[in-house]
Length: 349
Image (tube, rainbow, N blue to C red; front, side, top):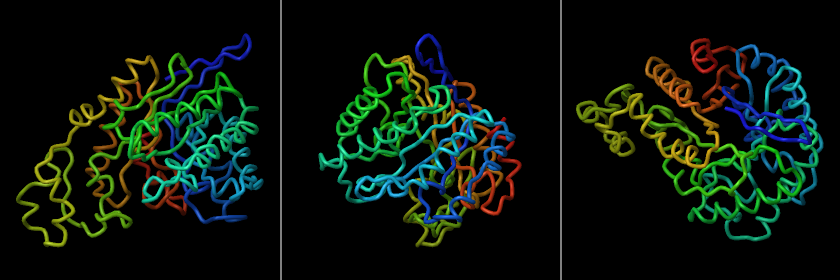
């Protein structure tokens, strides 16, 4: 996947094929100071490059990067810049993903971003401020992802915000690659409702993919599935009627909708068709910015799923970044640094 960016007489390509998310560092983490600085270092960047990846997706949160008045936390900005410089040194590209805003968390009940014009203007200002620092990096090295997993009740609310945010960035950087996802968790199901600015070829379309959820979030502690310890099958019938009937009543409520549902490589390909068709119609490249299965899910089924989805990405020309690099829940390596060699081999192949 390649996007050509012109800068003067020089052509620069932003190319991403296979990567990993550097999560729980500048996003979704309480680590600060030395603990945060030591969680992700140049050693990790070198390790990612040695695994065979060509880029990282770098989530950053508003509350980590700026105070409530919009003033920078300079230590966090330094970490972000250091990371990009390490990536440049080790030939990795970077997608800087504005992951969580104070006015918008993808799972929050109240999201002022959609109702408060001041919060929308603040969102644009955050990108203007990021551009002040990130614009010094080549277009071939860094791309901007507007926001992670927008969740608006109305698709047009997101489409309108996208148009204004892109316009704000384009006033400062005409050729920077901008990554745009669909409304409602960047789901494939809503991709046909996404509108992107016309006649702008420096756009990378992005979706996230965690289907089937019963497998990808098996027993996830932060979800109603936390109590599910029953069978999950892939490929084939993810939960048969006979298997369902043997479950305790308290498990049945959350998994009933999965009974007799079929999932295999062909089913996954069919689920990807909306983003594939959108990208083809617009002549834009396509990217899966997140996909994965929780680490304690059944191992055999998980690895087959990973093989299928990575093969599909490769066969359809979709770039990707797994969720994520370092984590005890979805990681290529554990928080202590132990590598999941079988998984790494599949997603970095």
